[in-house]
Length: 524
Ligand code: SF4
Figure 1 (cartoon, rainbow, N blue to C red):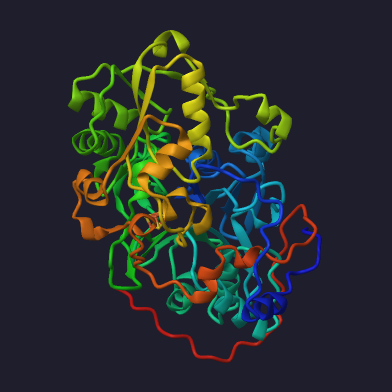
Figure 2 (figure 1 turned 90 degrees about the horizontal axis):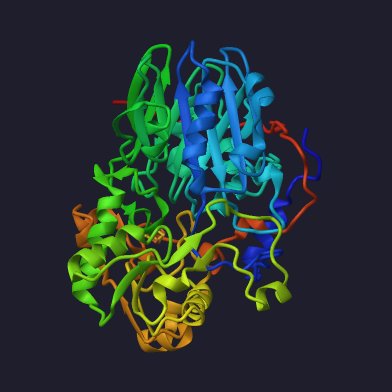
């Protein structure tokens, strides 16, 4: 059971109303966009659902490295196990042996804070329904109106022992009069504004839900045994030999249970997939909109070569997300391609950060250049994106120390000018080097001989998908989902104020009576 006092939502709301600046306590600066989460779900009676979920999460580890969790259901109970750490650190044979059932969901998470990571924010979130049953939920994305939901729960004196919008959604579902998970979503979904790809479950079924914009991906797969699978990316289907069936459509809720698979339309779809999934987040062996992420990245590299050619001897990628774009760049320019860096394959998020003096000594956590490859060469260095610019500057410095004659930096996406409110941590606007600096000022900051970016149009055209089906707000400022001013002020409204960490999961005490009639669900 979880320790610590419940979060004082009233204080959060009052401070936001008063225009308080939200302190990001314990935040460690980062220089890559960070994915918030990966979700998974399986309904497969007779199969080892916890191990299927484990391997699904293993394939989705790149989407979140701070915590991992699995919930299982067996027709009578819902059991949740989650902890801080990588999937391989959180689960072992003994734990998985204890997680038996007919269906399961899983979640990997990357929170927006560093050293102050909170175990109670790990997912799947769990809440007790009014009838005593349970709901477990994993969420990828971010809502833009979490304070509205927090106020609603606060007004009913409902306590939530965590500070994520995902736990708020679970609490809202749990307080519904109906114990039917589909009906509960029908009532709660209209209150949710923002991005959500969700897998959730009760004692007897798994549901997969996607917001009407489908900002974050979510796919359906099928096991040879006939079981159904839901996952953030197709790579999580491949690892368990499940066939890709189709995407969960934007605005759709899909149920998998003893009656098979059923689809419900919650909203008319208005697709706006995050284009950054193609640029950086998704694994290259996944498919989005039916297009290989690897192939799209290659196409972006070719387009970049057309838009920003470089007078160079050799093309090298900044490993490893830029590798496909670099190959495309080399193909189009006819320049030779080589690996100029070695990447430590086992570096994921570390909870031990190098000290300042270690940083100053140039401790290389992730990349090490190959001097024999780059010495004396004019390099076209391909990266996928630049956030703050500090890591890029270190990378350029590293190449020069290793003997590069010239460094021509080419970026296979446009400058990031705006923050993301839909589930990606791209830093605040004043921390984004692309928000107020010209290309030449950025070039000067990172120390490159020349700098070129892919254009917004070039990026979108490279996907081969109609351009109106994407969110590209962090590049263009055109937000498809309106962001309330109080959310725009800070992306981390629910991360304040802080409490002591707990070490387990606590069911929500449902104390308030809910008198409103349930809105009906629009069922296909
Ligand atoms: Fe993706 Fe950028 Fe849109 Fe966020 S703002 S969903 S990172 S394209």
